[in-house]
Image (tube, rainbow, N blue to C red):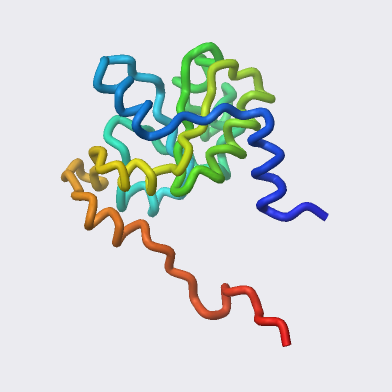
Length: 156
């Protein structure tokens, strides 16, 4: 049986990653790929990289194809464009980049460390209405919020 960590490790054997500072340099130089944030809409609304688009992982495949309610024309028509997939930590984005490669996207990479790493590197972040969010506020918004019942049971 594979676990979540195993799926990520397997995907990373096929997926390239880009570090936040490398992406930041590219953006500053005007080399702007599609920034595809695959977090859930509520996560995206709290904190996002300016210029990114939100396509939740749950509708990704349909968003990449024509003739679906979820179709995103930028993706459906863009299998040759450069895409950086973003999530909170870099795990979901690795899985999505792997799926997109299987769907024929030839220039897709995952943002290693996700928006947490982007924020740690103190790069621009904004909320849903475009207000800039400083790194300290970003840290608070990105902090894990595990409830006790979500924690792994302790062995006796």
